[in-house]
Length: 439
Image 1: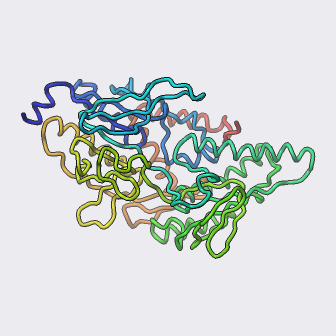
Image 2: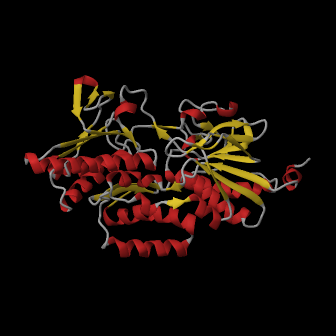
Image 3: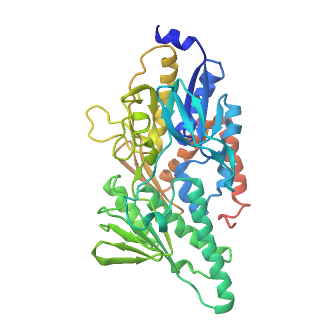
């Protein structure tokens, strides 16, 4: 039986697991292209009810972005773009029966809403992203907040705000100011952006009357094991970012490997001790642990599914993987394509075309990553980065480009007209709303 005839027997079901930047863009594209015309059944599965663009999580953590205003509801979006959404967390893949198993669904009180259940697929796309890699560091899981998801970012924002509320209450009685120590482990893009955003938030707290912690008493330490911040970016970009951070008072500590963390201190090699009330781990990534060897598929040392040039898993042509949870090493390259939002975006575009070709029994082609550069926001201070591989940019031009990255993501999900309305709404509300989430 030919591939084309096999697909013609019933409507082909494409199941996408993971509603992050790549998975949601892919589901939207396939829904509009195939689901709308009844050429395939498109199902998106995610463990959360809402989506927020992951590169914005450092702003959610600092409180400079209200996650409730920028979230997207999966059910509503699915109904508008011709695909189905299922709430659930994938825990296994049965390749023989071509099903995925979802964990039992529980409410906030731990009551079971739905038992374990399975969803059949004809084509499966795994797009569940990544989590932070603490490399087994003693105390990291117990004493650090990770910024892998919106709930974690919301938790940091609540704890950050609570320290200010506590200081304000004590100041009414004791009449003294308090020092706040924050440690960020890992000076990649997330760590650098968070450090700058927290500095901005500290000044905003003072502006809104929460001045029992003076902005100059907020000590932010950015700890990096490599010789420079932003080690994956060009040296010029790294130098500019570090200079800006030092200028606003961030303590940048390089060549410093963290070995242990407790409730009040970050311990590094060479007996370096850094006091910290709030601690954030942003050093390194890995795919979720449950992916290791799932369904007998090939995975690497950080749990990523190994895929070929068409993004099909190395051992099963009916299973694809994309984004941070996929390991694809282009021919002739020494390293996999990097875990960045632009990779997920380009893979979503590629797979949307590949799925249409697959339904027709045609060759899928090969994914080629075109690096458009990287931009790092330093809150209200600056934006630095490089474009097209070797052109360094900063200042207003870089800031406008950085903002446009999120707008392009919105265009991919909502189209130009609706995104334009969102931009107008944001501009109108900017002057009337607090610049910091205070609840």
